[in-house]
Length: 502
Image (cartoon, rainbow, N blue to C red; front, side, top):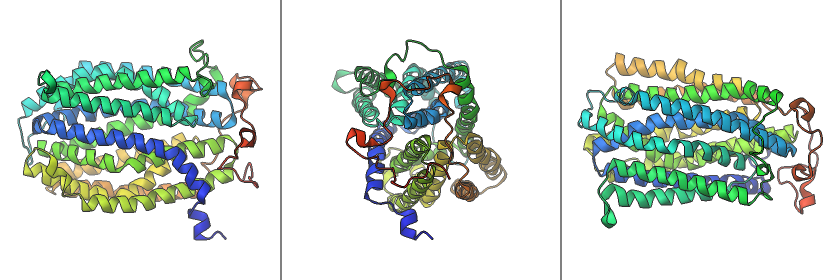
């Protein structure tokens, strides 16, 4: 029988491997979220209306961003497992699929936001008990911000195609560096353009949007140029655009596994926007309060996001290499690490929940709401960390229909109906409503626990090369030795007694 230490605590090699994958993602996410916090504070200095308008548009754009994430994630499962099995041509095909899927969502997103901007923004502009500000001026700020931000959507989509593929092939430094350049560019331009420093005109929310769009293209340029100039390190990029053909059988397989994932991300992103719209019924101050709290929560969620991606990458590669038992053992340790860390992080955020909102130039009502939302989020942080890791675990083994039921089904069948009922049918304070809606995720955690315990998620989903229309023998550039000692190092995740299957 396994002891607690052997089951949940890794050795030095385990944590070294985890840091190798997670640390660059944490740094990238940390810098991005810190700059987002600074941006939020700078826009907040313009006023509550400007801050709320930007928050509403970012909520809408977040639907697009998560849809792009879902579009590339379906192929990303295969990308990680192709890399784990040493199939470079398979990685190329997975990348091409990402391009097609991202382009489709780009067209859909731009079309909807251009045709129905006022209708979508107005969903969040409601008179209510917590109203604080001019709704018409908020709408104007939101429209100005949105139409400029649309110019950056193509850059975001293409950057995601490159960055996710690089991470899935064990390259995390390059995407991180590109993100650092982008956020530094964004911060400097925000300071110049929002407030009109160094002789520039005062542009307010327009300046914030211009800065973000320029930063998107700086990031894209860096990632694309560096990737193509280092084809020896990234062999999948050689001839990547020579042909855009994807084998039909592989396309069908990716669609079979990836479509539920795409639908999940789409429904989940739309669902979060719907829940925010439910809360917005209680007034503009609620929108502003949530904007402040969510920005700060995202900053504290650096490790949360990095561990989810680490689960997808590390466990996915082990499954692709046929190391099923090791994948399950590693996943257990990763999830325990995530939950334990977020007990501590949640405590720190709870202790600071009353301090951060004081930075903003807004009303005392908004600051009070933001502090209370932060306290609720801090209490549920370990639960959210567990659910997040469960999602990426199920996804790494290709259980995309299950992830759809696990994620979106619970959101639309539990969270949204309860939020609607409590907001519109009761007089409960909005903070109590938020706490009760968040608490429903306990049901999700219980289901996730039994799914993980069953072990049915741990599968290699890569079919034989012949069935994919790929060469049966990898070319020299795509060969990965069975033992990494050929490169002068042993695979830190491998075991001398590894069983290929259970």
